[in-house]
Length: 306
Image 1 (cartoon, rainbow, N blue to C red):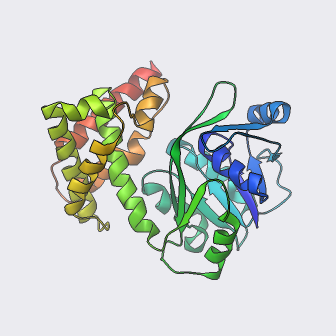
Image 2: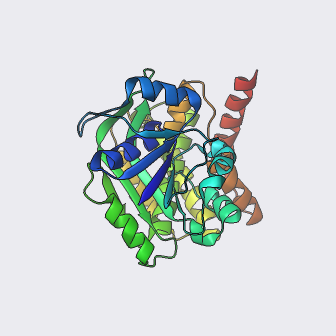
Image 3: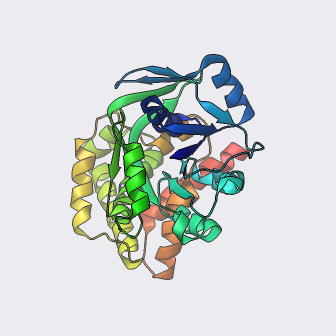
């Protein structure tokens, strides 16, 4: 199976690198600066699961010489439209696109652009970052990529993907309920990123303050209520489950959105929270906490522009 990984950053570099380490036919679609960096130094992965240095195949977006069986996307949501333009020449009638973006709205975008049959469901759980020297640094035991047909069918093509993903040093996990898993992760990330960006703190200090824990409960309730009205496979019982998960997290745990803010980078505020607020408005659901979270992120984005 010929696999194209879009970008060689924290997520694409890690999971693509693990597939390449195993011996799969992997090519990375990168920008010119990243191409030069990797050509000079290799693709370095520093991980609790073992360090590796790889010399991958690299192409720029102008180099359209081949097509691919599977395209792996791990971009930020605000780069999605540019990435769609980049990958279009590489997509054939048989190409599968596996997005690892957080949230859910990108699925409609990809289906509208490429057609229903091209788009798989996917998500990942991993703590990883791209260091200043270009190394991919992965720092915790969890390094899971979950994938499947959005319909839940056990198709011949998803079996081929399973075979390509098997026996790597990362956990590539097949799911026949991938859309349910994506919605559940969306709920969790909305809760974690909403609270940590609003309060500018790791999750530990937030949950140990009574009013902070109450805010977590209210955010979870609002998100679940909106998702339920939107027909998502979630229920009120998930509120307690998500709070339990929050309580089990490390004291200093931050969301990736909070880390982006600390670095002075753009956030995926629209992708996560504006999407929910639009559906809340359509169903006439009051969401004061979500509105406050989104307002906070809008103010931050405005300050970035000044």
